Length: 289
Image (cartoon, rainbow, N blue to C red; front, side, top):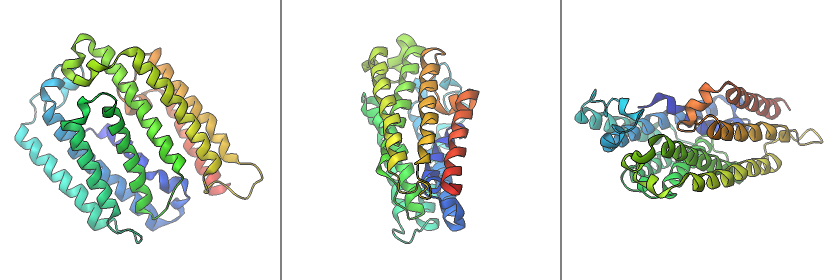
């Protein structure tokens, strides 16, 4: 079920934080419940993915310790767990999160996410470039669900920032897999045969640039920035994003990391402090600016 990867579902809370919704208790409850449901559905997807990747995971230096690959859990129990988690997560979206504007939108997004991840597990993860773009689509759906849960529209630049950030992290992960698996990489993930380190470095340069530019445009254009000061103080958060991107590139190229973004965030103290500082400053400006 990969609890460490549940940190990805923090993207569901983006709309709540960035639109000042934390002051509204019902909105906060709806957003938190939606994030929890994404944890449940994504856990079901992870189980399905591991069931389909047992042989490939057994050739991976880290993934071979996953319960299914290691033989600690039977496939039958795995399928039962995956089905239960999926029904609970998607059903909860339809029954428990009912925003006034679109009562079934959160449930529909959760269902779309699940179907997209199934397509990824069985087909799309074997297609070069499309595999990473599908992962990015999952993050966009998280942001969309967070906005739908609290009935707010957020800046299109936030969606762009999410797409570019997710593709940036996805290509970084492919790069690390390619290097760590060496000649065995295609056996673990067939699409890796179509990648090269130089190609992935080019993709990283493009997506890193696009991430910082699109976030800067968000800081300038979001209607939820403080309006009672002459200067746009939200621009003060841009250096935090630039540093995070540069630090990530440093960890990839110098330290040889990049396989698990959530682990990099939790293990690298400077990256974690930068992200926490960005959240604190952003929240301070939106709620007290």
